[in-house]
Length: 235
Image (cartoon, rainbow, N blue to C red; front, side):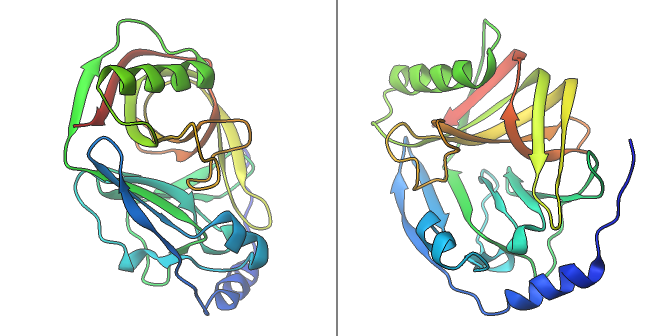
């Protein structure tokens, strides 16, 4: 894989432009005993594309918290799993570095965090087929668990195949494919309000991925299948 280096001067300029920040917080709502908080909004990003919705140092994290969003200036892809940041920075067209330690100056363009009281795991008896299969799985699982209608957080681990991932960056990010790897998926399912939790167009789930070796994290665009799955939903 070839490695490209971004201009450090551009990064400094973008961070300086974000020095003035605005914090917009959507009040936490209960979704199957999980509090979900959204910092920022699509309307705010449209009006102020260089806004910073929240500084990462100001976000209170629990050991069960998951989350996703792009970093300030669209310089990093933010993934949160079990209260630990996985911050991916593009180093080339298809390469990234992943760090668990945000700097004091790190912020998010928007950020969605779910903090369940606890997770309940169950092994799946069939593979999950792509994003459509994941949406159907979460919808049926939430119904079977007696969750009220609305958004629900989830984790899903297993062996993923044909996983297309992407990481934001300036002047360009990174994207690639995991042909086969152990991985953990985290995200939110919301069938009703695509804007509240930043659902990609035409989707009812927003999903991030972390490889089992910890060397790759980012936005999950699509995947072929996930086998030997373990699904975790809020208690």
